[in-house]
Length: 154
Length: 154
Image 1: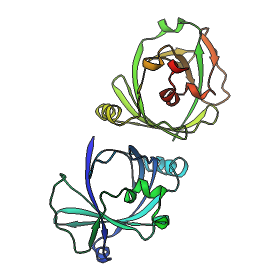
Image 2: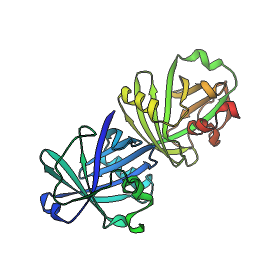
Image 3: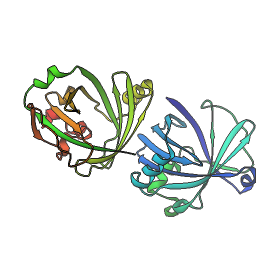
């Protein structure tokens, strides 16, 4: 069992975009309930099956297993809930912290969020100049939630 | 992606019981919906995460991944739907076919079913003398269904 401690923010502008090259992510859900999320994700040439427990603030239990990319394609194409989520991810390292900026596509086009994974819940960090309001506690920004209530419907 | 072609029967008596030694199975569900079952199972000293698509008659797509037994215990203890399912499984080989006889415990105590996995949907096989009525098409005998409607409530 792993632990995910993550804070999520909106972005103010596109200054982050020149800081990294995007990787394409395609993901779907075998369960999108906040109690027990089961996610299939293809990122570039790798694929993972990820299980997440219910969020407790910014803290969440997580279990992740690599799976063959052909299995992931089969699961995404035939079994996962509809629609799938697609986005470009930009990984930007600032002061030893990795920021993941996700630029959503499809029904969530227009939405961009920046996430940082922390070691502990009260860890301090420097905010990049392009960072906007925090949305860590807003469930509608969760990917599993964006499935049923995409950004284009807000 | 694998394929599961399975026929399921009741048993007439306990003549099967002397033919094999039981293994204890403990399993739970991260999704028990028939559309996309996600099961965690500990069988003896091994653990698996298994994903199953919707049954089409006796045919079903299946994906299975081994996971650490400590992860499986964490998932069963903290995350899976309640209740868990526990049973003893007896594996009995007859004419090169493996029969799995499951003797349920807990809220499903009293239920015993025998399953055989086939190579193709119209494969012929010899029925053991202790085999009773076929229940392949009765959804209430599916393990994911026994979770919500245990045998003791029938």
